[in-house]
Length: 97
Image 1: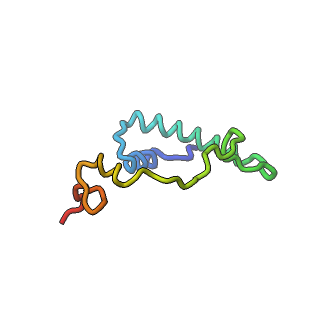
Image 2: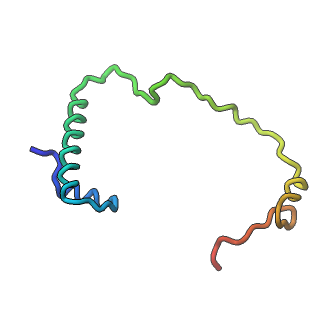
Image 3: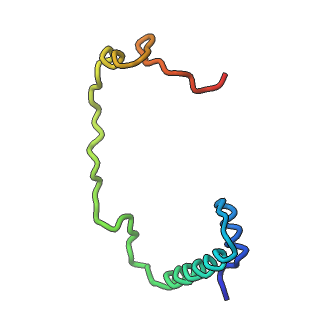
């Protein structure tokens, strides 16, 4: 007995805005049934003493420390701006009026 129906496959395809043929519905139904069967086999494993795996490699934070640094002088930045006003870069409005 299949764990997923063709109607469920069609419903999911519709939700994902996928146009699939009847041939593909049958193919995906079989494939998804195999995936569900495999997932159920995994549920049978004893994972009581297995720590969660967040990453397959033992990695530490490889990012640099977030250190505040002095930025460019405002006058220098404004020299490169096409338009500026009152010490700030002027950009076109993106909100409708």
